[in-house]
Length: 476
Image 1 (tube, one colour):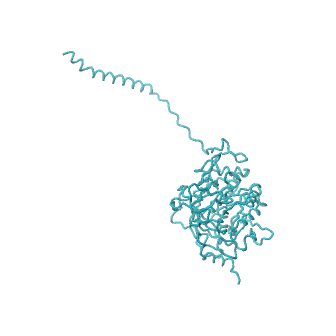
Image 2: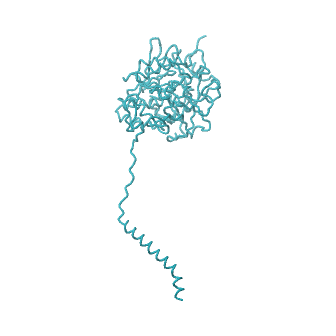
Image 3: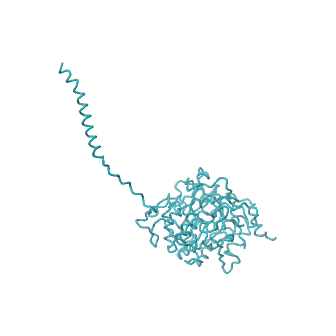
């Protein structure tokens, strides 16, 4: 029997019911130990953090990115602006980055996206750079881990577009660093259940990391950031070695910190919340950020919009590996058919892509900074979490919510190793206003004398009134 064409297979996936425990909106890519298969989950961290104005209710969020395939001509494009990018003040940050260095936002920075493959839908924007190993017939596909020559899953394309997607005429900004260059490394095909396609595996992630090592370097056609909007459930020597090989060459690895599934799954280590929990050892490679085991790994979490999401059902994973968090609800991305689409739910996959974009902005603004200095700018200007330094990171917020504008403008001076002066205390971008100096009071002496004369006169009057009856009796 002939297999259906890639576009037809994608349509079949869209109609196929997801396995028990899976959920479509706002999905993240997570490999769970209990099933050894790809699982899609939606995280919520009930913080109630207000980061900026919400988008108008009349705007159209467009079709869900998950529901669009390459042959889809009926999807509705998003006209709703990207809510996270508005709240992070990305438009202002892009202008600042350009004013600092004279470069376009993200220019000169390469970001490797290890994911499900990136469809080249940038059109007049920055194209995707394919990684073509000798045995791979298509772009960045690693043949042992991705079987199809087409991009089947929305995930890699959506994550790449959050990093460097061109501006859209209707919805506005899509990518945070549109001049950055994305390097595509496809390590799986689909998050669905299809015997003809391959799901995410630990071995695939390791292979992607090993393949990117040769691309890492300071040049404009090389890679300085590796985005991993995915996770695996265990720390292995092979994974540790592959991540270390990338960071030893000077690239920053940005990884999603994990999410709690929405349905019961007894075998899932990220299942029901337990008091005092810490899931840093259940989500990798984000776990390498714990205690700075690998200082160039940045683990990223997400906030929750208290106005738009239900704060009564917290499903966020608590982790001491989290370095920073960003808002992700209401993100806009590009679908595999080239239209804009919505990523409605909070997601640490999107969070990792956003932070990769912010890091690309910082690198384009300060091209002479070391990776450690770039991370110091990101973390030391974040707000709401534990200050950078000796204090352990907050298990919900890490070092805090990323503030791209402050990261670009704060007068911090980290050393080449990323250490900040004064034991890592945060410097203020604007010094506090001086206390007002009191004006000389020329009547102060007169008022003081008047008070004393008033007290003396009043006292004399009181004494006279007390003595009057006594003196009157004596006259009689």
